[in-house]
Image (cartoon, rainbow, N blue to C red; front, side, top):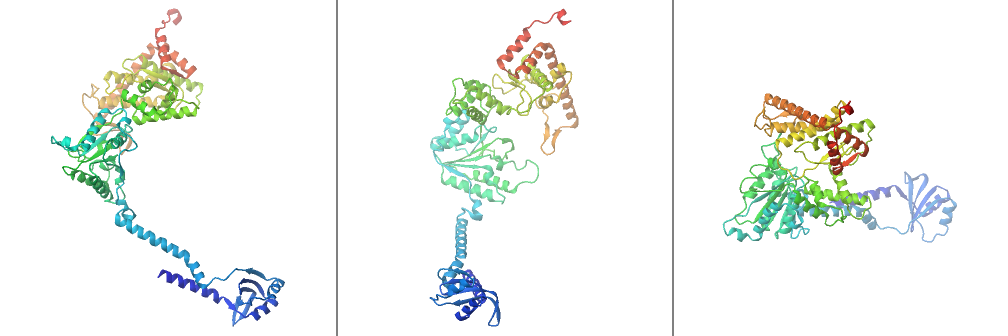
Length: 606
């Protein structure tokens, strides 16, 4: 029908073109040329088409164009045309009607063929579920066979307990009869829990490299689409594929995207997410007794997961993937630097000691930034200073182009010297590492401290000492300058937050007693405001009063230390104004020498 329509359209155009051209005999054409009435001609073989200079009355119609047939050998026609200044165009050959039809319809035929091919391909994909409108039902999981990038547990430094628990899962899948001999059942699900960057996904990839079974990997967000029911269909297909390949492992990264509690949060519920979660719960319950399929899931928010996910028979085994300790950090640095040329002075043990709280991803970023820094300065190897500069860039930020005048520079030096002096001469405080007044990131100056060992619990004296250190800069400004500046804003914020936690969460206040209060500074819906959740107004007022009292006591303690060590404070201010950055060894020597200096006598004081 389409071909017939196109042919009819072409014929109509052809007839319309022919109706605008008057056929005349050769003698008439010759006479018109001699009379100078012809403007231009187009010669195609023995056929001549042309136009008159003015419309001619032919057959009772006023026509501008004409058409005629000339003899094959007419030697007088061309000289006559040239003599009368007629525009002449010559076209080789003459297309047949069939050729003209083919040329006109060829583009349309190609478009029709492409449309038919796409329609059949889409229909085929819809039937198989592999594409088209129904292709969204297809699972987005990626299947890996052994080995996966040759990544094994040997490539994952630290995490000994986590690897031990997962090694048991791998052995269970390899030798199920060995565990079932005493009545053991294969675990349904294993939840990897830990802060971001600690290696949960890396650990799952290592499981894929260690296990000699198919490994299906998918992210929790890939289940969710704009159409309700798509996520549930993907869950069904994922588990069907895994069951066909059993024994197998399914890894769901960021499971909190789909497994969030159905009763938590604000606003309306998400039907698509809830249906997907229900389907996931149903599939995990549908495992047969001898179904050797294990589900690994990773999250950094186990507190928001639905309780139905964590009950026995589902994700009943939890593997903690925490930030690495000192030996693990040393091993992680060795893994990330084994293919990098290190200089002879690089001490990975010192780098590991100076990076408490760093995750595996942070350490990998540190090694990469050190390599980039060495590349920028054109070195052949990575030196210790490259790691120091990379640490400063990650923790403090890049150096700023801000130039401080003499007054502002002295204020910053006084402020940072106050932190350093209070930290050095106060018990239960982390040792100093560096003091600098070079603006970096958002800070105009920094006093760095490094713990001597990894800390997990802090005592009341240690927290009180930290409060005094935080207010040391504020106290130094008021002591030496007689006024305070806006530079203490961040210190006051951190000190207020710490004091509020000590009072409301840690039970370190005699006024409020050993009670835990839900006290927070930022409400999830109301934004930045001092708010209490689940406490009365009287209790909130008591917490705020106790915070003010605790901070006032910390400030008095900091002023007392600075008044006692005022020579050390003034000497450190002068040294910072001169050198801008003072490292640990020189800093300790300067403060200790000032502390041991004899006090001035009465005459000198006068």
